[in-house]
Each structure stands twice: as structure tokens, then as C-alpha cells.
Length: 173
Image 1 (tube, rainbow, N blue to C red):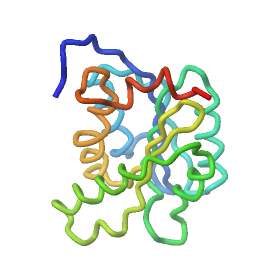
Image 2 (spheres, rainbow, N blue to C red; image 1 turned 120 degrees about the vertical axis):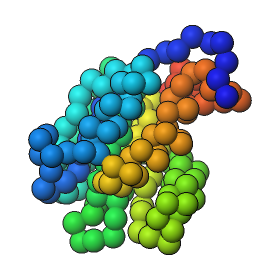
Image 3 (cartoon, rainbow, N blue to C red; image 1 turned 90 degrees about the horizontal axis):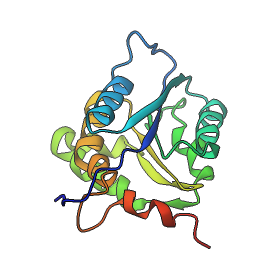
């Protein structure tokens, strides 16, 4: 539910984790960028990196350190194969985990992909006052995560509460 508060656009960086995707054939990153822009946010950068924990960590670290980035969303690398390392790359960077994100994401995904959802290691958290979401690499998973979870939580107008309204307090000591 949204209220009559004014919308506050956020600056979002999108990371595509893939050994094979390019800008020409990336669907998941484009899906996230389009949905974020359609919601009124600013996609300030979109980058593709290989499924390598150090390259993932470097990209996310740079965005977490950048004052102008409010949200980082990655897609890819959250499965269980040998090359899937996004959670391992990102989790050490997080100041706080948002455990409910992964739990609810898998619950929602179950409606579409049934027990295959156990293969998802989607995570979210906060690092240096920046929200970080790590999503599976499929465009369907990106649509589910954005449409059913992230979009409303990044909208300052969503009631009873949302992540966007907490941003001024994230650096409290």
C-alpha cells in the first residue's frame, strides 16, 4: 500500500555476474534496469563481470564506497555450481543481513518453479548505508524479486514501512 508521500528516486547500480553474457544478450540486467527506471529510479551504472568472487567483490565494493549509489542489485552467481560465488563474494561486505529477503524470495519463487527454488542462494543486506540485493541470473527470478519485493521496499511511499525511509538512519551509531 502506498500513501500520498512524494516519491524519492534512488540511484541504483546493477551488476550482471556471468561468464557468457554480453550487453547484447543480457536479459536479466536489462530487465532490472527497465523495471527500476519504470519505477522512477535512476540506474547510474550497469556492469557485467565474470563469475569470479574477487571481480564481483571489487565491483560491489566500489559501489558501496560511492556516496552516489543507494542500491546495488546483482543478478547471477547465486546457484550451487562450482562457479557460483556471488553470496561468498558479497556477504563479507555486508554490515547487516536482511535474512527475510532470501526467505520470502524463495517462498515466492516456489509458486513458479516449485522445489527448484532450493537451488537459489539469493541474499540481501546493508553495507555502508547501501542496500545490496543478490538475485539469481534468470530474468524470471529478477522479475519476481523486483515486482514482488524490491520495488515496494525502495518506494518511500509504501506503508506500513519500507527500506527507503530508513536510509537516513543507516549510519547511526
